[in-house]
Length: 383
Image (cartoon, rainbow, N blue to C red; front, side):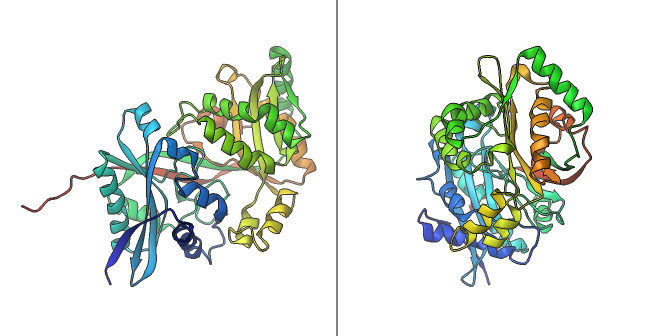
């Protein structure tokens, strides 16, 4: 049967089918971690996603014989294109069965949509912003995913190569063993840095205080620290307000490190949280009727893995050992909370300054993922 690709609208019935297709595709895979469907709906609906202020998007689904066989979202991040001088259309939130016809038709829809809007290249998988999921898994298919990353079958990169896509950039991920104590050299560096620059780690005891006093500063720090990273565009005021509401209220406060200077201005932060991977698997991505229970149980500590979600240091303090101050504070908390392992999540493979911070820990690189790029071919016309 032929494959038909249709643009889908913004109503939640169609978007639910889109999201559910991906979840069902991996229903027997123990490494796949489903997204939280309610968050995914807000991201894919342009009327709810604050990134729509500077992004255009269109989601597509592929069907064969009335059954869904593929899904993808085309995104034009105008802020990033203006910054880089490129005319890229991104593909993201992509899932498909192992079928060349399905894959070709799905990506042709993205290419056509991008070409009609003046784009010359297609790149991905990437989200609307750097805060969304990005990077196709190319190594580590037998490793449990995290809530912050994409899982995909090994046939995905095979189809990308078949279609002529090439590597644009790779990310690597590490699993660290939480040590029995803070490494002596790490503690020594932390003490020196604190004295030299007059820095201290705040012990946050109140989520509202964290949000009110440092919520905006946290995401403004991300704008500074991540400014030169691949695919990054500064978060807008509306995005910052959205992320404060969406994320800061669910943090376990002893997994958060806030470093300030003598004037209590934010200098660095490390945000981590218990792994929600198994809880999301049990919930199948749904809060109701019982998903909330599994997620709440995990947040309260029913996990031996901690996910390192965001680490950022003001540019003027980078490469000065401030990261040691963050983890000298966090490691005793990790030990007390029963964490045995820490997941780094995505790090650009060439970002040596980030990877250097793990040199004092037992670790292994267990996943690698890729952003692919291809020139959009000219549309053939019949004469």
